[in-house]
Length: 329
Image (cartoon, rainbow, N blue to C red; front, side):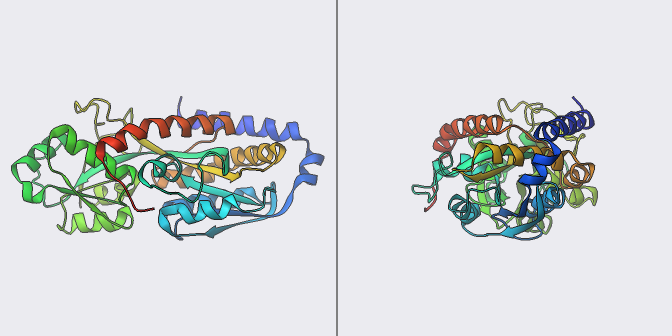
């Protein structure tokens, strides 16, 4: 299904849902203000998604909608804040999957329960990851297997950066190294762009990160995208072969951002929020704005998002154990 066709279907469904609520009932249900919480700073990917969605949530769902950045602890502070927020539809969390599906496997203690403290509302977007190299790596290296072979021959230069320790990009690189029996050293950064800047500056060899983070640098000829982690080639980097195309079996990894509310939020409020989010995420301005960042806008039912988190949580449990990474809680 093409992106445009999917968006059309989402928009049609959302309109139907709004119609089912009824114009009068919807007007009565409208709240004064909606606060969308993100655990990451202004200007980043998560913040940008929240602001584009907020623009579409008023005046339909709320008379006003704004974004509040609750940064710290790799996104944990935002979840802690939302779990104790009023369960009246006035506070909406937006978070990447990692904080809910991977953190329970790497932190001995979390101050929130990903299943019982927050309630799913809708998927927000999905994205794949890319693996790129900079000027430290010879131009003759054109694929990920070739990079790993080069690392074996040049162990002192065998390293890669990621946006954070314990992130999906970190684990992708770690799994690559294990599969190839290469000591591929990880360098953690505070975000993908700082890692990329060090890569194109020749301080590190490679970077694993969201594919949209690389496109501007690839276009400028500053780095080379060797592989992508999707099940099929990314629409944002169609010339880049997937890892499975390069012979790396089962190396299919993606991530998503989802919207959640406090656990005790009434079902009727969750349904109204879901309908409003479907409309917001299907709006051309939202779809096109997210595409600039290499993100594919998508919505879902609360049940679909719950099932998606459950599947990802179960998938990452043995992978994290294999990697052997833990973090201080």
